[in-house]
Amino acid sequence: MSNFFIRRPIVAIVISILMVIVGAITITSLPVAQFPDIAPPEVRVFAMYPGADAETMEQAVATPIEQQVSGVDNMDYMYSLNSTGNSSTALMVDFDLKTNPNDDLLLTQSRQQLANGQLPPVVQWIGIDVKKSLTSPMMLVALYSPKGTLDTNFLANYAYINLNDPLGRSYGIGLTQVYAGQYAMRIWLKPDRLAKLGVTVSEVFLAVQSQNTVNPAGQVGGEPAFKGQPFTYAVRAQSRLKTPEEFGDIIVRENPEGGVVRVRDVATVELGSQDYNVVTRLDGKPTAVMGIYQLPGSNAVEAAKGVRKLMAKMKESFPADLDYEITLDTTDAVRAGMHEPSCWCSSSCISSCKTGVPRSFQCWRCLFRWWARSLSSRSLVFPSTHFHCSAWCWPSDWWWTMPLLWSRVFSGTSKRGWLPRMRLERLWKS
Image (cartoon, rainbow, N blue to C red; front, side):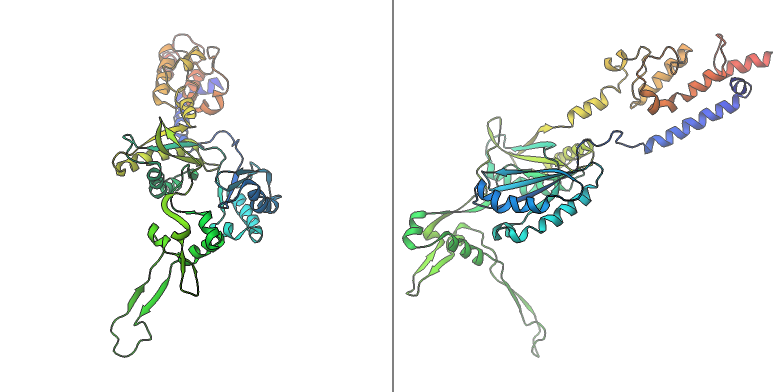
Protein backbone atom coordinates (compact mmCIF):
# COMPACT_ATOMS: atom_id res chain seq x y z
CA MET A 1 0.00 0.00 0.00
CA SER A 2 2.84 2.40 0.80
CA ASN A 3 4.45 1.83 -2.62
CA PHE A 4 1.15 2.64 -4.29
CA PHE A 5 1.01 6.10 -2.74
CA ILE A 6 4.75 6.67 -3.17
CA ARG A 7 4.54 6.14 -6.92
CA ARG A 8 1.20 7.94 -7.23
CA PRO A 9 1.51 11.05 -5.09
CA ILE A 10 -1.25 12.84 -6.96
CA VAL A 11 -3.74 10.22 -5.82
CA ALA A 12 -2.60 10.69 -2.22
CA ILE A 13 -2.89 14.46 -2.52
CA VAL A 14 -6.38 14.25 -4.01
CA ILE A 15 -7.55 11.84 -1.31
CA SER A 16 -6.19 14.11 1.41
CA ILE A 17 -7.84 17.19 -0.09
CA LEU A 18 -11.16 15.38 -0.47
CA MET A 19 -11.08 14.18 3.13
CA VAL A 20 -10.35 17.68 4.38
CA ILE A 21 -13.21 19.12 2.31
CA VAL A 22 -15.64 16.44 3.47
CA GLY A 23 -14.59 17.01 7.06
CA ALA A 24 -15.04 20.77 6.74
CA ILE A 25 -18.55 20.24 5.35
CA THR A 26 -19.64 17.69 7.93
CA ILE A 27 -18.38 19.69 10.90
CA THR A 28 -21.28 22.10 10.42
CA SER A 29 -23.78 19.28 10.91
CA LEU A 30 -22.22 17.65 13.95
CA PRO A 31 -24.71 17.06 16.78
CA VAL A 32 -24.66 19.49 19.66
CA ALA A 33 -25.34 16.86 22.29
CA GLN A 34 -22.68 14.14 22.30
CA PHE A 35 -23.85 12.61 25.55
CA PRO A 36 -27.26 11.13 26.41
CA ASP A 37 -29.75 12.94 28.62
CA ILE A 38 -29.39 12.05 32.28
CA ALA A 39 -32.38 14.05 33.57
CA PRO A 40 -35.66 12.23 32.93
CA PRO A 41 -38.63 14.05 31.37
CA GLU A 42 -40.71 15.59 34.11
CA VAL A 43 -44.25 16.98 34.17
CA ARG A 44 -45.42 19.37 36.89
CA VAL A 45 -49.08 19.46 37.97
CA PHE A 46 -49.78 22.55 40.09
CA ALA A 47 -53.05 23.38 41.90
CA MET A 48 -54.16 26.06 44.37
CA TYR A 49 -56.90 26.06 47.00
CA PRO A 50 -56.96 29.51 48.66
CA GLY A 51 -57.36 29.40 52.41
CA ALA A 52 -56.82 25.66 52.75
CA ASP A 53 -54.32 24.15 55.20
CA ALA A 54 -51.90 21.33 54.42
CA GLU A 55 -54.26 18.56 55.57
CA THR A 56 -57.14 19.92 53.50
CA MET A 57 -54.88 20.26 50.46
CA GLU A 58 -53.76 16.66 50.83
CA GLN A 59 -57.24 15.21 51.24
CA ALA A 60 -59.23 17.39 48.83
CA VAL A 61 -56.72 18.16 46.06
CA ALA A 62 -53.50 16.14 46.13
CA THR A 63 -54.99 12.70 46.78
CA PRO A 64 -57.62 12.74 43.95
CA ILE A 65 -55.01 13.92 41.45
CA GLU A 66 -52.46 11.32 42.57
CA GLN A 67 -55.02 8.52 42.33
CA GLN A 68 -55.82 9.36 38.71
CA VAL A 69 -52.30 10.15 37.52
CA SER A 70 -50.78 7.07 39.17
CA GLY A 71 -49.97 4.41 36.60
CA VAL A 72 -49.74 6.70 33.57
CA ASP A 73 -47.84 5.15 30.67
CA ASN A 74 -44.01 5.04 30.92
CA MET A 75 -44.02 6.65 34.38
CA ASP A 76 -41.04 5.86 36.62
CA TYR A 77 -42.17 7.55 39.84
CA MET A 78 -44.02 10.59 41.15
CA TYR A 79 -44.06 12.68 44.32
CA SER A 80 -46.09 15.59 45.69
CA LEU A 81 -44.91 18.87 47.20
CA ASN A 82 -47.53 20.18 49.63
CA SER A 83 -47.08 23.73 50.82
CA THR A 84 -48.59 24.85 54.11
CA GLY A 85 -48.00 28.56 53.45
CA ASN A 86 -49.59 29.43 50.13
CA SER A 87 -52.31 26.73 49.98
CA SER A 88 -50.87 25.02 46.92
CA THR A 89 -49.67 21.60 45.89
CA ALA A 90 -47.40 20.38 43.10
CA LEU A 91 -47.24 16.85 41.73
CA MET A 92 -43.99 15.95 39.95
CA VAL A 93 -44.25 13.00 37.54
CA ASP A 94 -40.99 11.56 36.17
CA PHE A 95 -40.95 9.41 33.04
CA ASP A 96 -38.51 7.09 31.32
CA LEU A 97 -35.57 8.68 29.50
CA LYS A 98 -36.60 7.16 26.17
CA THR A 99 -40.06 8.78 26.13
CA ASN A 100 -41.10 11.94 24.32
CA PRO A 101 -41.79 14.85 26.76
CA ASN A 102 -44.72 16.03 24.63
CA ASP A 103 -46.40 12.63 24.81
CA ASP A 104 -45.79 12.50 28.55
CA LEU A 105 -47.46 15.89 28.94
CA LEU A 106 -50.57 14.82 27.03
CA LEU A 107 -50.87 11.55 28.93
CA THR A 108 -50.55 13.32 32.29
CA GLN A 109 -53.04 16.01 31.35
CA SER A 110 -55.63 13.45 30.23
CA ARG A 111 -55.24 11.57 33.51
CA GLN A 112 -55.49 14.77 35.55
CA GLN A 113 -58.76 15.77 33.90
CA LEU A 114 -60.34 12.59 35.27
CA ALA A 115 -59.90 14.01 38.77
CA ASN A 116 -61.68 17.31 38.09
CA GLY A 117 -65.04 15.94 39.26
CA GLN A 118 -63.59 15.16 42.70
CA LEU A 119 -61.91 18.53 43.24
CA PRO A 120 -63.50 21.50 45.06
CA PRO A 121 -65.23 24.08 42.83
CA VAL A 122 -62.74 26.79 43.79
CA VAL A 123 -59.82 24.66 42.57
CA GLN A 124 -61.57 24.03 39.26
CA TRP A 125 -62.41 27.72 38.94
CA ILE A 126 -58.78 28.77 39.42
CA GLY A 127 -57.54 26.01 37.14
CA ILE A 128 -54.83 23.36 37.30
CA ASP A 129 -51.49 24.06 35.65
CA VAL A 130 -49.82 21.15 33.81
CA LYS A 131 -46.42 21.93 32.27
CA LYS A 132 -43.14 20.31 31.28
CA SER A 133 -40.48 21.48 33.67
CA LEU A 134 -37.56 20.28 35.77
CA THR A 135 -37.69 20.37 39.56
CA SER A 136 -34.83 22.75 40.32
CA PRO A 137 -34.48 26.17 38.65
CA MET A 138 -31.82 26.67 36.00
CA MET A 139 -31.43 30.39 36.70
CA LEU A 140 -32.51 32.95 39.28
CA VAL A 141 -33.02 36.56 38.16
CA ALA A 142 -33.43 39.20 40.87
CA LEU A 143 -35.14 42.53 40.19
CA TYR A 144 -34.20 45.21 42.71
CA SER A 145 -34.24 48.94 43.25
CA PRO A 146 -30.69 50.33 43.75
CA LYS A 147 -31.95 53.46 45.54
CA GLY A 148 -34.79 51.68 47.37
CA THR A 149 -37.61 53.74 45.85
CA LEU A 150 -39.55 50.70 44.57
CA ASP A 151 -41.10 48.15 46.90
CA THR A 152 -41.48 44.40 46.48
CA ASN A 153 -45.07 44.64 45.22
CA PHE A 154 -44.08 46.93 42.35
CA LEU A 155 -41.07 44.76 41.42
CA ALA A 156 -43.12 41.57 41.47
CA ASN A 157 -45.94 43.11 39.48
CA TYR A 158 -43.48 44.45 36.90
CA ALA A 159 -41.97 40.98 36.57
CA TYR A 160 -45.41 39.39 36.10
CA ILE A 161 -46.53 41.88 33.46
CA ASN A 162 -43.38 42.62 31.46
CA LEU A 163 -40.92 39.73 31.95
CA ASN A 164 -42.87 36.58 32.72
CA ASP A 165 -44.33 36.03 29.25
CA PRO A 166 -41.24 36.98 27.15
CA LEU A 167 -39.03 34.68 29.22
CA GLY A 168 -41.56 31.87 28.96
CA ARG A 169 -41.42 32.15 25.15
CA SER A 170 -37.64 31.96 25.08
CA TYR A 171 -35.91 28.81 23.80
CA GLY A 172 -35.51 26.00 26.31
CA ILE A 173 -37.61 27.59 29.07
CA GLY A 174 -40.37 25.39 30.45
CA LEU A 175 -41.57 27.49 33.37
CA THR A 176 -40.99 30.91 34.91
CA GLN A 177 -42.05 31.56 38.48
CA VAL A 178 -41.94 34.81 40.45
CA TYR A 179 -41.21 34.18 44.11
CA ALA A 180 -43.34 37.09 45.26
CA GLY A 181 -47.03 37.86 45.19
CA GLN A 182 -48.42 40.04 42.44
CA TYR A 183 -50.89 42.87 42.95
CA ALA A 184 -54.25 41.72 44.28
CA MET A 185 -57.33 43.20 45.92
CA ARG A 186 -57.17 42.13 49.56
CA ILE A 187 -60.43 41.82 51.51
CA TRP A 188 -59.64 41.44 55.21
CA LEU A 189 -62.80 40.22 56.94
CA LYS A 190 -63.69 41.34 60.48
CA PRO A 191 -64.96 38.35 62.47
CA ASP A 192 -66.68 40.47 65.11
CA ARG A 193 -68.68 42.41 62.50
CA LEU A 194 -69.57 39.20 60.67
CA ALA A 195 -70.89 37.65 63.90
CA LYS A 196 -72.82 40.80 64.84
CA LEU A 197 -74.57 41.07 61.45
CA GLY A 198 -74.96 37.31 60.97
CA VAL A 199 -72.99 37.24 57.72
CA THR A 200 -70.90 34.22 56.72
CA VAL A 201 -67.71 34.10 54.70
CA SER A 202 -69.50 32.22 51.92
CA GLU A 203 -71.98 35.07 51.50
CA VAL A 204 -69.17 37.57 51.05
CA PHE A 205 -67.39 35.30 48.59
CA LEU A 206 -70.51 34.70 46.49
CA ALA A 207 -71.32 38.41 46.47
CA VAL A 208 -67.88 39.33 45.21
CA GLN A 209 -67.93 36.55 42.63
CA SER A 210 -71.36 37.47 41.27
CA GLN A 211 -70.90 41.25 41.15
CA ASN A 212 -67.30 41.40 39.94
CA THR A 213 -68.05 40.14 36.43
CA VAL A 214 -67.91 41.24 32.82
CA ASN A 215 -71.34 42.33 31.59
CA PRO A 216 -71.87 42.43 27.83
CA ALA A 217 -74.69 44.87 26.98
CA GLY A 218 -75.10 44.23 23.25
CA GLN A 219 -75.92 46.87 20.61
CA VAL A 220 -78.42 49.64 19.90
CA GLY A 221 -79.71 49.89 16.37
CA GLY A 222 -78.26 46.59 15.23
CA GLU A 223 -79.75 44.45 12.48
CA PRO A 224 -82.57 43.81 11.94
CA ALA A 225 -83.16 47.52 12.53
CA PHE A 226 -86.16 49.76 11.93
CA LYS A 227 -86.36 51.75 8.73
CA GLY A 228 -84.42 54.93 8.94
CA GLN A 229 -81.92 53.70 11.55
CA PRO A 230 -78.58 54.96 10.13
CA PHE A 231 -76.18 53.95 12.90
CA THR A 232 -75.43 50.97 15.14
CA TYR A 233 -74.04 51.69 18.60
CA ALA A 234 -72.11 49.24 20.78
CA VAL A 235 -73.13 49.51 24.41
CA ARG A 236 -70.36 49.28 26.98
CA ALA A 237 -71.42 48.40 30.52
CA GLN A 238 -69.36 48.41 33.68
CA SER A 239 -66.87 45.56 33.64
CA ARG A 240 -64.75 44.16 36.47
CA LEU A 241 -64.14 46.31 39.52
CA LYS A 242 -60.73 47.97 39.82
CA THR A 243 -60.48 50.18 42.91
CA PRO A 244 -60.87 49.37 46.63
CA GLU A 245 -63.83 51.76 46.80
CA GLU A 246 -65.68 49.81 44.10
CA PHE A 247 -65.10 46.52 45.92
CA GLY A 248 -66.24 48.10 49.17
CA ASP A 249 -69.59 49.03 47.56
CA ILE A 250 -70.45 45.40 46.75
CA ILE A 251 -73.78 44.49 48.34
CA VAL A 252 -73.56 41.40 50.54
CA ARG A 253 -77.12 41.39 51.94
CA GLU A 254 -80.23 43.49 51.47
CA ASN A 255 -82.89 43.43 54.17
CA PRO A 256 -86.61 43.79 53.38
CA GLU A 257 -86.77 46.87 55.60
CA GLY A 258 -84.31 48.62 53.32
CA GLY A 259 -81.07 47.98 55.16
CA VAL A 260 -78.02 47.09 53.05
CA VAL A 261 -74.86 45.32 54.19
CA ARG A 262 -71.86 46.08 52.00
CA VAL A 263 -68.38 44.62 51.93
CA ARG A 264 -66.87 47.70 53.58
CA ASP A 265 -69.18 47.14 56.57
CA VAL A 266 -67.68 43.73 57.37
CA ALA A 267 -64.16 43.98 55.89
CA THR A 268 -61.23 46.22 55.08
CA VAL A 269 -60.46 46.46 51.36
CA GLU A 270 -57.01 47.45 50.10
CA LEU A 271 -54.69 46.87 47.15
CA GLY A 272 -51.83 44.66 48.27
CA SER A 273 -49.96 41.48 47.47
CA GLN A 274 -51.58 38.19 46.59
CA ASP A 275 -49.19 36.30 48.85
CA TYR A 276 -47.22 37.47 51.89
CA ASN A 277 -45.60 34.14 52.74
CA VAL A 278 -42.44 34.62 50.65
CA VAL A 279 -39.95 37.42 51.32
CA THR A 280 -36.98 37.85 48.95
CA ARG A 281 -34.06 40.23 49.46
CA LEU A 282 -30.78 41.00 47.71
CA ASP A 283 -28.11 42.62 49.87
CA GLY A 284 -30.83 43.56 52.35
CA LYS A 285 -32.96 45.36 49.74
CA PRO A 286 -36.49 44.37 48.66
CA THR A 287 -36.28 42.12 45.63
CA ALA A 288 -38.51 40.16 43.29
CA VAL A 289 -36.80 36.90 42.36
CA MET A 290 -37.77 35.02 39.21
CA GLY A 291 -37.06 31.30 38.96
CA ILE A 292 -36.42 30.09 35.40
CA TYR A 293 -36.84 26.35 34.85
CA GLN A 294 -35.39 24.45 31.91
CA LEU A 295 -37.54 22.58 29.41
CA PRO A 296 -36.72 18.84 29.43
CA GLY A 297 -34.60 17.82 26.46
CA SER A 298 -33.36 21.32 25.60
CA ASN A 299 -29.82 22.70 25.55
CA ALA A 300 -29.26 24.41 28.89
CA VAL A 301 -26.31 26.50 27.64
CA GLU A 302 -28.29 27.91 24.71
CA ALA A 303 -31.32 28.51 26.94
CA ALA A 304 -29.25 30.45 29.49
CA LYS A 305 -27.63 32.46 26.70
CA GLY A 306 -31.06 33.40 25.36
CA VAL A 307 -32.22 34.50 28.81
CA ARG A 308 -29.17 36.72 29.28
CA LYS A 309 -29.65 38.30 25.87
CA LEU A 310 -33.36 38.89 26.48
CA MET A 311 -32.76 40.45 29.91
CA ALA A 312 -30.14 42.78 28.45
CA LYS A 313 -32.64 43.86 25.81
CA MET A 314 -35.49 44.31 28.30
CA LYS A 315 -33.27 46.39 30.57
CA GLU A 316 -33.34 49.18 27.97
CA SER A 317 -37.04 49.77 28.76
CA PHE A 318 -36.78 49.46 32.55
CA PRO A 319 -38.22 52.36 34.56
CA ALA A 320 -35.98 54.56 36.64
CA ASP A 321 -34.27 52.99 39.66
CA LEU A 322 -34.83 49.42 38.49
CA ASP A 323 -32.08 46.94 37.75
CA TYR A 324 -31.57 43.18 37.67
CA GLU A 325 -28.90 40.68 38.63
CA ILE A 326 -28.53 37.00 37.77
CA THR A 327 -27.86 35.47 41.17
CA LEU A 328 -27.78 31.84 40.02
CA ASP A 329 -26.82 30.26 36.70
CA THR A 330 -26.24 26.52 36.73
CA THR A 331 -24.66 26.62 33.26
CA ASP A 332 -21.60 28.62 34.34
CA ALA A 333 -19.66 25.45 35.12
CA VAL A 334 -20.69 23.89 31.81
CA ARG A 335 -19.52 26.90 29.81
CA ALA A 336 -16.24 26.98 31.71
CA GLY A 337 -15.67 23.31 30.94
CA MET A 338 -16.40 23.88 27.24
CA HIS A 339 -14.05 26.82 26.64
CA GLU A 340 -11.18 26.28 29.09
CA PRO A 341 -9.59 23.17 27.48
CA SER A 342 -9.87 24.57 23.95
CA CYS A 343 -7.27 27.31 24.48
CA TRP A 344 -3.78 26.48 23.20
CA CYS A 345 -2.09 28.28 26.08
CA SER A 346 -4.20 26.50 28.68
CA SER A 347 -2.13 24.58 31.21
CA SER A 348 -4.82 21.91 31.49
CA CYS A 349 -4.51 21.29 27.74
CA ILE A 350 -0.72 21.05 27.55
CA SER A 351 -0.15 19.16 30.78
CA SER A 352 -1.96 16.04 29.55
CA CYS A 353 -0.29 16.02 26.13
CA LYS A 354 3.49 16.37 25.88
CA THR A 355 3.34 17.20 22.17
CA GLY A 356 0.98 20.11 22.73
CA VAL A 357 -1.97 18.54 20.87
CA PRO A 358 -5.23 20.00 22.26
CA ARG A 359 -7.87 17.62 23.54
CA SER A 360 -10.56 18.96 21.19
CA PHE A 361 -10.26 21.35 18.26
CA GLN A 362 -12.90 23.88 19.24
CA CYS A 363 -10.47 26.70 18.46
CA TRP A 364 -9.18 27.19 14.90
CA ARG A 365 -6.06 28.81 16.25
CA CYS A 366 -5.22 25.60 18.14
CA LEU A 367 -5.75 23.52 15.01
CA PHE A 368 -3.49 25.51 12.68
CA ARG A 369 -0.79 25.94 15.30
CA TRP A 370 -0.75 22.19 15.79
CA TRP A 371 -0.41 21.65 12.05
CA ALA A 372 2.37 24.22 11.84
CA ARG A 373 4.20 22.56 14.72
CA SER A 374 3.89 19.17 13.07
CA LEU A 375 5.21 20.48 9.75
CA SER A 376 8.09 22.41 11.29
CA SER A 377 9.23 19.46 13.42
CA ARG A 378 9.00 17.05 10.42
CA SER A 379 7.44 14.43 12.67
CA LEU A 380 3.89 13.15 12.72
CA VAL A 381 2.53 13.72 16.21
CA PHE A 382 -0.69 11.78 15.52
CA PRO A 383 -0.66 8.83 15.49
CA SER A 384 2.91 7.90 16.43
CA THR A 385 4.96 6.92 19.44
CA HIS A 386 5.34 10.62 20.28
CA PHE A 387 1.62 11.04 20.94
CA HIS A 388 0.70 10.97 24.64
CA CYS A 389 -2.83 12.38 24.64
CA SER A 390 -5.83 10.43 25.90
CA ALA A 391 -7.25 7.92 23.44
CA TRP A 392 -10.75 9.38 23.35
CA CYS A 393 -9.55 12.15 21.01
CA TRP A 394 -9.22 9.66 18.15
CA PRO A 395 -12.91 9.01 17.23
CA SER A 396 -13.90 12.69 17.10
CA ASP A 397 -10.79 14.28 15.56
CA TRP A 398 -9.34 11.60 13.27
CA TRP A 399 -10.13 13.37 10.00
CA TRP A 400 -8.15 16.47 10.99
CA THR A 401 -4.96 14.38 11.02
CA MET A 402 -5.49 12.56 7.70
CA PRO A 403 -3.34 14.96 5.60
CA LEU A 404 -0.43 14.32 7.94
CA LEU A 405 -1.18 10.60 7.95
CA TRP A 406 -1.07 10.35 4.15
CA SER A 407 2.07 12.47 4.03
CA ARG A 408 3.69 10.10 6.51
CA VAL A 409 2.60 7.05 4.54
CA PHE A 410 3.73 8.01 1.08
CA SER A 411 6.92 9.69 2.29
CA GLY A 412 8.46 6.37 3.27
CA THR A 413 10.99 6.05 6.07
CA SER A 414 13.66 8.30 4.67
CA LYS A 415 15.05 10.75 7.22
CA ARG A 416 16.00 13.39 4.63
CA GLY A 417 12.51 14.50 3.95
CA TRP A 418 8.93 13.36 4.33
CA LEU A 419 6.92 15.76 2.18
CA PRO A 420 5.63 14.50 -1.20
CA ARG A 421 7.63 17.19 -3.00
CA MET A 422 10.90 15.84 -1.61
CA ARG A 423 10.00 12.27 -2.52
CA LEU A 424 9.18 13.33 -6.10
CA GLU A 425 12.56 15.04 -6.45
CA ARG A 426 14.40 11.88 -5.35
CA LEU A 427 12.38 9.72 -7.73
CA TRP A 428 13.03 12.09 -10.63
CA LYS A 429 16.79 12.10 -10.04
CA SER A 430 16.85 8.33 -9.93
